[in-house]
Length: 501
Image 1 (cartoon, rainbow, N blue to C red):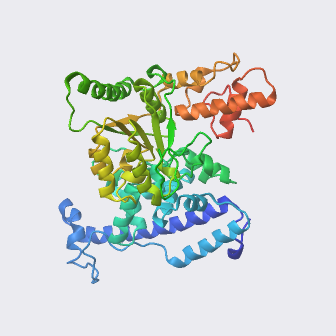
Image 2 (image 1 turned 90 degrees about the vertical axis):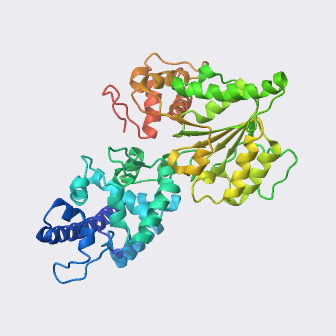
Image 3 (image 1 turned 135 degrees about the vertical axis):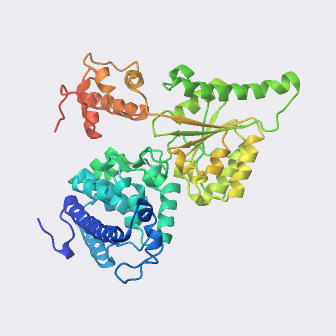
């Protein structure tokens, strides 16, 4: 079905084709310009050194009598604004008719910049047609690797018109972009030393969402991490305002839990990570004893640790196990659920309460380069926590979201990886409450092949239990697990369990 410009797009695929057509025009313009530049250089260059320095000598020698640019980054051949404005009108017309378009919905939900939105489109294109991969490889030339994906350098070159836009886009992406915060975009490791040469890859769930024929708001909700910075959290009944008589000027929630029955053996983590967590507990226990035994106090007694890992990898559970080992309450604050205007009040409340164990979730809101909180105020917070017996845990999804000066303030940076296959099998087994009957057909080995976090496994099992209870089945079996997986658009690798439709 072809739609008129005023009618909007009939569906998500119609919109995506229009975006990809625009991207292809941009790529072909860049290729034509690169071919012309290569032809001009080949006419004059006598060696590899001449080619490597062509960005300099082309400013002096004009092969066709034109004044050339003597800067490395020439003005981009970005698409003219008129097609973009027309595309935006069609998007708005589609939305007014109730048609959900995946990429615009993602852009609006996360407040993506035009660069970030086009970066997603560039990274998505090779998932639609490998022709884009071949175009990327040509444009990346001798710097291209064997990947089908665009590099950060190519995206910046194509999507930025000048040096100012280049600097702004790179800073936004590396310091505060929700694409990295929510792990929707990855900068893949490479043998190259520079960040610019790292390929850009979208998370598989995001690719599936963007290519959906009929995306829904629920699909987008499930795509975003529950503890991500850009997800609006809803306080639960057990959340309390823990101010000890201090009344802040803005409302916010701080959650305080008593000692929980989570032991070290309940944590399914790499042994090295577990030992690092135990070392934090041991140091705190030493602080409480050294003054009694020898009447000595260290200058800086508090510990600060940065916890890095995807949602569901066990950061909160590790903090709970620390609280149990130390027999102290755990004070939690999730910055994703707090307006930036209330951050000073949060810090003041924490300083008044002086909790021995503090977990700050979505800590990148304070620790990134462009944080709303004043640097001096946060430095005061670190100073106060370090000069009292305490453990401060700062939880983030990616280490790159934390500015280097704040990383240097941390005594330890602890990485929580996705569990390995043996750990996943154990996570599937322990996810079932002991009082819930399990069917004999539960295939732990096959389920463990799905590369999921412990939190995701727990959520899948919980839904499977609810499905079994709603159906009146006496036990929870693979049928209920498959139903839960299907709701999350996950599929087992084994052909024994075909996808249900």
